[in-house]
Length: 276
Image (cartoon, rainbow, N blue to C red; front, side):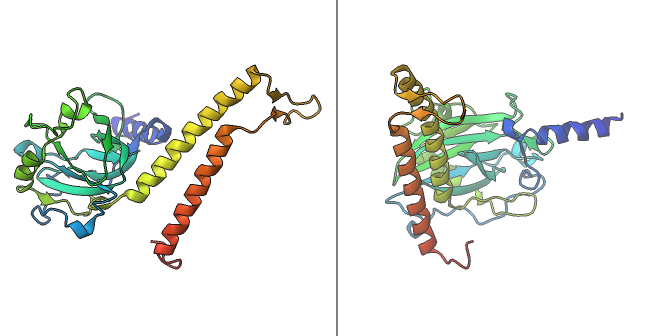
């Protein structure tokens, strides 16, 4: 078997391992060498573009460098497991985010695949507690470091070290003036420069539901130990169950009611005939 064919088979196998956190990046991972950043020069997000009372704002930027300008594939940035943008040299963008603890990840693509798990490919894996009305600045650079970190960031936080760091507003504003907006273009498509609040709510719901399902199993085990669980009869193996209602079931029902109410409210704000 020749080398090109072996490579293609290996890539196909890796893409098929979606459950292992591996993603394909073809179409959005082009670096500055392939697609330079030619959007407008930096401008702060106007107040009318985001809800500063109830949401948070995150700026993402990458200072321009000669090394970055020669890059073929730019690193991908994720929030709660959703891909939003690849950070190219000299570019910036922003995201309006629902307050709460958010999972932030960055990966380097490798021949159209990312998330292989090697130290080289995995840049960032961190949780950030975001508050309503706050503005955060995430700086990414492989060639220049900064010690001007966000003053509220703990010294041992993952965003206080490495190439991706949460920096102070003064440092960010000085460097952001030299960047351009990363538009969504061919080979470098992105879903940033907008609100991702709906995605955050969905992620929160899924996270909460998973936790409650795990707690439900623990609650059932406790009830069995306390004698509050009826075994299934021999003639109907699917019968039996708790002899009294589960608290986690009540919480799961409440979670579903809140989700349905929220979705109904979102439909009323839009148009039933144009869901997009």
